[in-house]
Length: 240
Image (tube, rainbow, N blue to C red; front, side, top):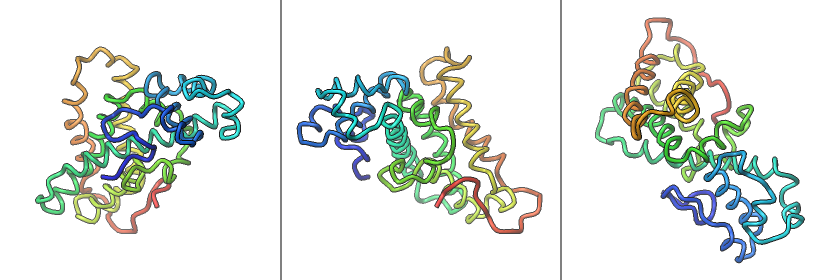
């Protein structure tokens, strides 16, 4: 796996400090690193341009050459947080046994998307909120900035997994349209209930234990259908 999309972040869940990057002369990157650090610590509400400049060690005016305002900085932080999620999801998918037959492997990789999504939510709640609670539409679903090291965004990884299930004939083309939205809603709902809803008091590790059962239920719900199977597969939202 290649390095993460922002400098020095690695794959250990820690966002690099911004100051060292800035000392190499890239103020924009340093501010992005600081914004990611703020999001990791306190979610999207913590991403404030003035605090980012303070951490980098420059004046607020210097930041305006790169970001018009706080919303501009936050927008980039959202995309980079999605890229971080894509890396976690990709790693989870890549852990699937390559020796499985095509159908079993396609289903296992689809389930891994949901498990990876929930793992990211529980391990990085601040970045998760920035990645998936701020966007108001799917405009970043195919954005290069929101893609992980493998070149795919979280939404694209989910779409790819569903397409593979159709190709392996463990999901009918009839069930394919809109399946991204159904699967995503199920795992996102669990994440938000655990982070901000009545499931906040679940013991540590409970969501990790429930995740395989949840994605199994989604998988079975999207599996082979008795309905009409003809027609070409289509996507809801960008996935190219």
